[in-house]
View 1 (cartoon, rainbow, N blue to C red):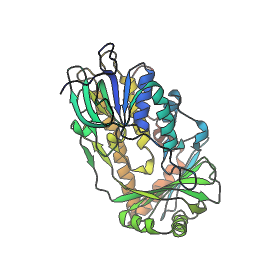
View 2: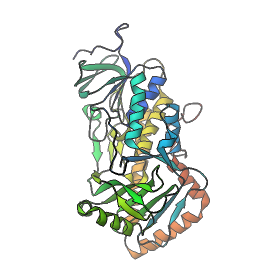
View 3: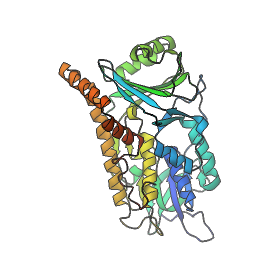
View 4: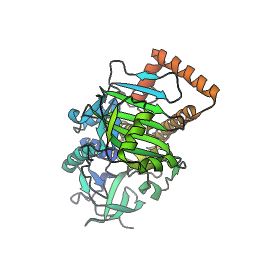
Amino acid sequence: MSEPEPKDTETGRPLDVAVVGAGIVGLGAALALAQRGLRVALLERVAPEPVRNALGFDPRTVALAPPAVALLKRLGVWEEADAAAIDRMQVWEEEGTAALHFGDGETLAHVVENSALVERMWNAAEKCVEVRCPFRVTDYTELAESAALSGEGTDTPGVAARLVLAADGASGGIGELAGARMRRSRPVQHAIVSVVQCRREHEGAALQRFGADGSVLALLPLTDPCHRALIWSLATSRQEAAMAWDDDAFYRALNDETEAAAGIRGVGPRFAFPLRQGLASDINPSQRLLVLGDAARTLHPMAGQGVNIGLEDVRALLARLPAGDLAPPGAWRRFAADRRARSKLMLGLNAALLAAYGARAPLARAVRNMGVRFLNGNSIIKAQLVREAMGVGALTTVGFDRPGGVQ
């Protein structure tokens, strides 16, 4: 296969970086590398479009931890008015006698609508990055000093770059073309996402409740004080029944599930998707290819860490970016090992949390409630958990070893 014509026809050199996938993580990587003065191409199948439901919101939301927000601010794409702060959080269970309360004078995260953030990032990318859309990658080949991506959908059929970043999602893409298979768990739950209208203002509070049947229901604040984003993870059979309910029956069920903590009085359109946890077999499957974001791992949404871990990938990449050749032999192996270890940690924590709250034996419930009471009353341990969840703890910052600290 011959090398595609590079963008820089004057020098005849390949591009510095090709980023495949224009979600939040891919766009973040493209913008950050362009700000470093690199020549970047962004390849995407479909241009983003604004999404608004009947209540005026995109039901797909992300809760961004402070380091993710700091990165987006540096990229010039953060808009405070479009984000709702989570200042406190309550976590409890259906059969519990104790609850966890987080938030003590600091913002834990910001909730943003996915499409609004992606649209801002896309507009910024069009000013400093070569955007090729529609572009569907069909082949990946490594050459002596670059990697070649063949595709279809634009007048220019291919791209050559010294480093390729696969941020094209969990459904499989160029990472799998290069041998990085995604090992996924069997879907035992589905998630329902929507927006709900409430009688009471949320006051910056996020709510999360574990059901006796293993379900997890989260309500996150939105920019309107009487609206919240809903993410409800539940068994497939129950999800199918819930999607068949009319709106009145659905929001009454939500009030029952949350013990009327939010005072829900209306609900927007609902969407459902299967939940799997997964991990790519290699984050650096070939010399010039790195796998980022959901293409590297997929997490249960209960902790809201998917996009945050993906933007951690971007920050870790920036911290390790070599000068000169961006992908000399072996340069990215430690990065891959660190990011895979971080992924395994998060996957394990999610699995352990689901197992702990899923244990229904009386003794297990008693021990769990004792543990929750102890944790809620121990400010030191709880503060460290908050730091890890916010992305600034000791476990979170593994791999950011460039002088000067986390980038």
